[in-house]
Amino acid sequence: MIQNRTFWGKYLTNTQLDLSIASYTKVPLTWGEDSYIPEFNKLYFIMEGEGFVRVNDKTYYPKPGELYLLPSGTVQAYGTISGNTFGKYWCHFTSKLNDSQLFDLIKTPVFLKTHNQEQLKSKFEQLIFYSEKEDISSGFRVHAILLDFIAEFIEKSGTVNLNTRTVPSYDKMDDIVQYIEENLDAPLCVDDLASIANFHPNYFISVFKKYTGLSPIQFINRQRMERAKHLLITTDYSVSTIAESLGFDLSYFSRMFRVHIGFSPTNYRDMVSMSALSKYGE
Image 1 (cartoon, rainbow, N blue to C red):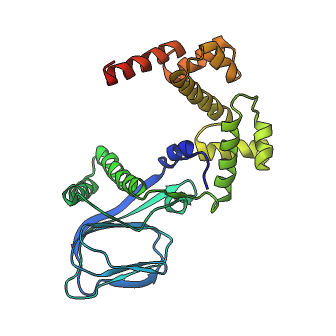
Image 2 (cartoon, one colour; image 1 turned 180 degrees about the horizontal axis):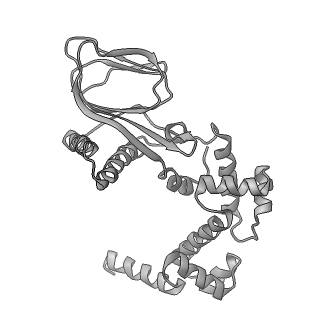
Image 3 (cartoon, one colour; image 1 turned 90 degrees about the vertical axis):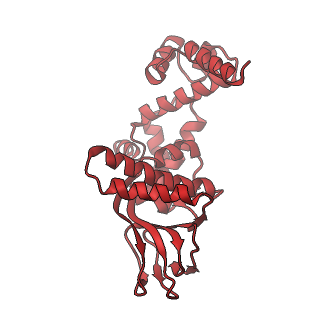
């Protein structure tokens, strides 16, 4: 189970999404397939009718207003059960994160009951519209809508099972990230981190950058700046005390904070404090 949810929550948004098709269909009586494993994810938004879908060993009977997410790599089946067939918005898309599938790492429910069908219908119509356009901006629109659908499943499913154990490299990176978080006030070097993962230092750097997008040192410095931001906002510690707690001398800390955040530590604290006062009218 992932420990550092803040980091992995940000990292998972780097998922590469590729929409292959989006449409609305009133399915025919012949609609159906049994026990196959698709290499793409499917979204079904049921508008009318009845039928069934099966994911692994569980069968569902979707109702109008329900949104289904059928992940790639699962054993699936679907079909009709009467002449009152489904009318549904649907799409097929892939979601890869490096060498893994997103839904191997995130376990979401198979379906959600929606409370605003018109809003969801509008999203699908936009998805269809932008998927058929060829201008550059449409690709961004498509990705935004797909990410919005995924976020809906994550937000409305309660506790989402985030599982890195299925991919050993993710599991090791999770341990490393956790170790870094717990030791931001200590000297951290690549050789020590590599030994924790049982990797050669050069290989460790390559794997770490692949899974975080940053070198180990860049990542450590970014996490220290995030910790500094938190301390500046939530405590009355002096800037020099915060710098010392993160292993920096004051001048180097101030320069690094400005490079990463765009403000000096003092200006950042003042800006956030003024924003909070304005928000609450104090």
